Length: 91
Image (cartoon, rainbow, N blue to C red; front, side, top):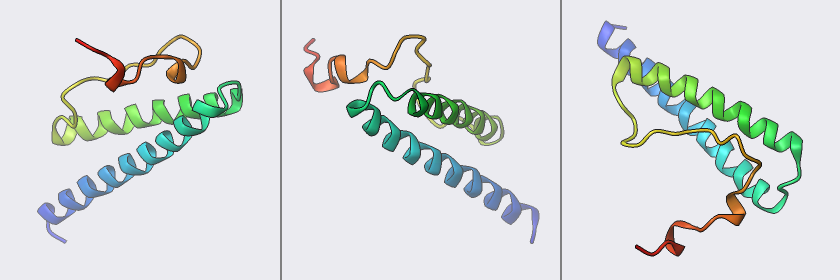
């Protein structure tokens, strides 16, 4: 395999890993919306969030930015179901 194909394969592999992590995070978020007191699930969500940030950093350091806006962790309890949804915010 030539260098171009190897680079393309590595890039594709990182993107696939990001998709897997994002899928798991979406599923956990949906679960936590109905089970906000499940500490084990919150811990798993935070663990996967950290892993996703690591993989995103690896990808972006090699291939460029993935998103326009950054991500941040919240030091607060799980509050997503209690905050306004994007379509509920009026400007």
